[in-house]
Amino acid sequence: MLKKIDDFIRDIQLASIEKSEDKAAEVEKFRVKYLGKKGVINDLFEQFKTVPNDQKKEIGQALNRLKNAAMDKIEEFKNNVIQTSEQTESGMDLTMPTDYSELGSRHVLSVVLNEITEIFSRIGFTVAESVEIEDDWHLFSALNFPPDHPARDMQDTFFVEKEEGRQEVALRTHTSSVQVRVMENNKPPIRIIAPGRVFRNEAISARAHCIFHQVEGLYVDKKVTFADLKQTLLYFAKEMFGEQTKIRLRPSYFPFTEPSAEMDISCNICGGKGCNICKGTGWLEILGCGMVDPNVLEACGIDSKEYSGFALGMGVERMAMLKYQIRDLRLYFENDLRFLRQFEAVI
Image 1: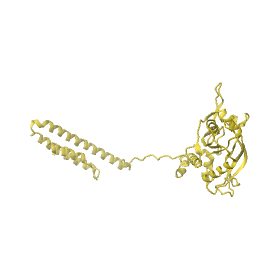
Image 2 (image 1 turned 45 degrees about the horizontal axis):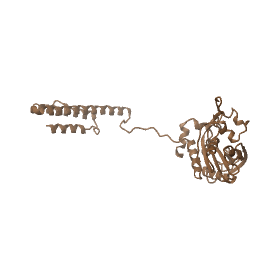
Image 3 (image 1 turned 120 degrees about the vertical axis):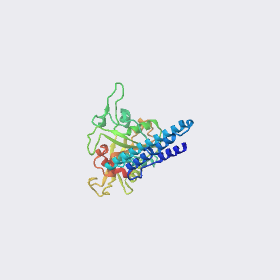
Image 4 (image 1 turned 120 degrees about the horizontal axis):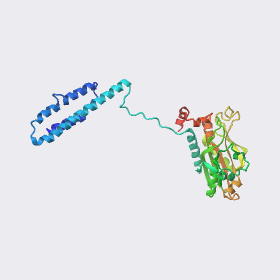
């Protein structure tokens, strides 16, 4: 009898109504089979009356397990019927796998920044990073900024409230401060790029923002020349914007480089023929550069008579604007999914 009970329990556990067209009828059929007046369990209880007294305890417990198993299975079937009914009414199949939310992707600025980093890494540049709140020495003085330079004025820089007896500090306006820290703590040869977020007190518009990202490069070694700078810039432009890209260098001024230049690339929209993007000139300005001023080298503890170097700096937002023809840099910060999803295929 124990074997018969165990067989019934196993059958109950394996029972299913998933493939049944009329699940409610199948549940009732199952209930009658096991719990009906003429069902399996009632029949076994009738047989139980004839069981020897020394076996009644063991068989009685087995019968109770069988009854509980049947009742639990019926309850499971009823829940299945209710769920199926709800799915039919709502048009939903709750047995389907969960519809997971879409995975995010990298921001277009991260895509461009990673591409810039990768290009420079191929020619031996490593990444250097530092703090975003800087003191006056690393932000201005060591970079040869005169005491009356406009960049020290409140209209350009977010100054942090000064504590008595301490240097004036501010949110960094450029990542050149990273170059200073690297030169102070390392002996040449130095070949680094300094990517990072910078801050300037400017009105937010389609062409300007108070927060943006820069990548600055620095190479210091013996006998570094302007020709090295030019070849590095040409290599970068071709890798970033295509092999057909041309560059030109125009004289400019920066406190920390001498001589200094602005670099333009041939317009990648019109191919240099002239359009509204390049204002008919065929050229687009993308970065500033120059030979590191000897005063900067000396301020950082590097002998300017033995070593020379070049520096360059570019805005990541501008690079992305040129590469993907983005007209309004405010879009970078608004988290508009319609804008961000355009670059999923780029990643």
